[in-house]
Every structure is written in C-alpha cells, then in structure tokens.
Image (cartoon, rainbow, N blue to C red; front, top):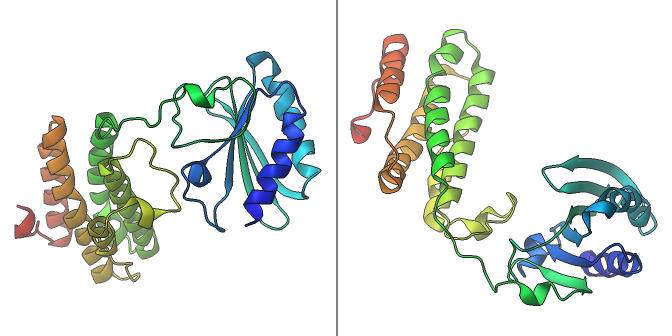
Length: 266
C-alpha cells in the first residue's frame, strides 16, 4: 500500500529534525485497521516553543516527497494540517506537546526518541455515552423535525430533503454514542464501527423524493428510528426527556399537515 512507503519517507525526514521528539501514526493505521482507502493520520510530539516553526516547515517537507494540491491549517486546540497530494494521497498531521491521553492500541510509533509509547496504557476504557452530547442531539432532532410543516407548506421539497439528511445524521451520531469504544475512529468506517442492527436502523430511513408524501414518510421514518432509541438512552443516562417540546412538535405537525404521531411511538 502507498501508505507504508509514505509513512517511511515522512518519518525519515522528520526524524532528522531534532525539534520533533516523536512521530506516531494514528487513525485507522494506528488501530491496525488501515486499508488502501485510508488516509494517514500523523501525530508529532513537539515542544510548545517549536510547534509553530515545525508547522511552517511541514509543507516543504511533505512537498519534497510528493506534489501537494490541497493544504489547510487550523488549530482545535492542537495544530492540525490536512493535505492531499496530486495522487490523492491524504495526509493529516497533528502537532502536540504530549500523548498522555492516548493509548497503545490507537497509536503506532514511527520514531520515539523519549520512549513515550512505552509509557502509554494499552487501551483507554470506554466511559459511556456523552450525556451532554446525547441531550443536545435529542433537542436538536425535535427542533429540526418540527420544521417539516415549513418545508411542505412552502413547497420547499428540496429543502425538506436536506432536513431528512440532517435528521439521519443525528441518528448516526446517536448510534455512535452507543458504541463501546473510547476511540470510535473517523466517519468513513461505518461498517467497522456499527453493529448490523444499527446499520439496519440507519438504512430504515429512506432517501425521499422531492414530493409532499415522500418527505412526510421520510421524516416519520427518522422519528421512528431516533426517538424511541433516544428516549431509552435518556432514561439510562438520567436525562430529563423534553416531553413538552416533543408534544408541541407533534401537535404542530398534526395541525399543519394532518399527520398524527404513530401509535407505535405513543
């Protein structure tokens, strides 16, 4: 795979830079799940006073290995660079001061001058769903679901299709919270992350045609897939269900569209 040669070439150049204390590969290759479609996620350990300079030099380093056609720098909170070569080789670099919050099952060392890898735990325990995130998903799902009469009433059927996409995305995010892994990986490996039952639930949401009936059916399918699952998770996490908010959404939809809450969700 091209990633093996690329990792070796990058490691050779960065190991010659004494400001870089260690270089790890993370992402799917760090977890031992990489394939020929995977990008390369690199984690460079660099003291704070050298990070900006190393980041500035990185484009030249990568460009000396392969021509770069896309480049984007940002910080959140670590320095991160996304790059794509002319052969569509995707390489991300994160520059950090340490990897104390990581584990050996998510990183593989390309070089490690200080023995940081050996000090890491083998794995990080899963601490359960993020309560705040789940609560936010529940409220946002109901809010977007309640916009169905706007799209239908105005004849904005293309807008309604986008709404279904938003609702389906929130269903996926909710199901990710169920996955008992501390490192859930990226968004391009659903079949590795989700169970067959979860994938079937996602697939139960149809891609609607830009028509009134199709949009209504798709929104109801989203609600049927999301709301019971979210309510069960809310009970387990001690989240107060926004019942008045949900009830108001259903009343609004019934009043405007004549669509009642399905008995199976009552």
